[in-house]
Amino acid sequence: MKVAIICPMEEEIGYYKEHLGLSAGEIVGSTEVWTTSYQGHEIVVARCGIGKVNAAIATTLVAQTSPDLIINTGSAGALAPDRQIGDIVIGEATMYHDADARAFGYELGQVPTMPARYKAPENLIQDFLNAYHETDLTATRGLILTGDQFIADTNKVNDLYQTFRGAQCAEMEGAAVAQVANQFGIDCIVIRAISDTAQQDANVVFDEFVVTAGQNAAKVTLNYLKHL
Ligand code: ADE
Image (cartoon, rainbow, N blue to C red; front, side, top):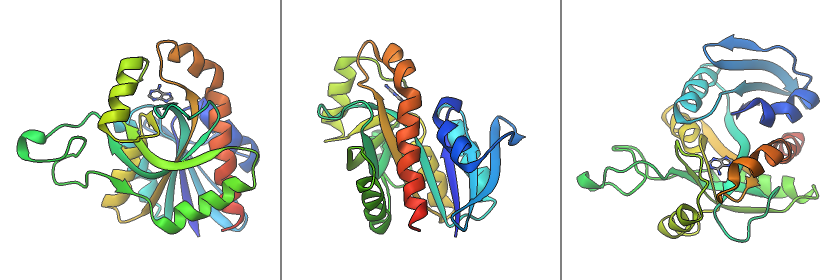
């Protein structure tokens, strides 16, 4: 099987670099790409950079290599009150929180003509639930929100949690990766770990825990690949 892993930041990709033996990758625009193998599978790793457009560029690039599956991992700010720093969120679905074409009858978060939510295949969700059970981490499955906003505001957290009922966390790339994967007909799942609680001090907390969050999400992902 061929699996592409897309990760936004250098801080979030370290676990893969260490465990997959990645050194200098190929730079294409602002994306860095590595090709390797792991447990008998072909693996493409891409560091996409931050935000929806960078995520879409990198996903388009890796889609050209015809992977069977695209996995997006990294950090996220918690929206659900019971999500703790370090916890894993297995993305049942992703959607944008900053898209709005309701004037034309679309759902809040829905880009016109595109699905409102990008759902991960149920078998993938189950496989990732099995993969996390073998770690010492806590995980939950749920909705992940994406937008070109770093959330650092209690009122915004409450608003997003209520508006997008029960959304577990917010990040800045997942739905864009999923949208591109959807357009290329490639299965996709987003796996995030909580780096901060998206409150007023989120920038400071993020800096402290982004590496841990990146590692946790990568740990579950490599565990998943081991059983593939
Ligand atoms: N990624 C990690 N923390 C985040 C936050 N608070 N908002 C958006 N993306 C994030």
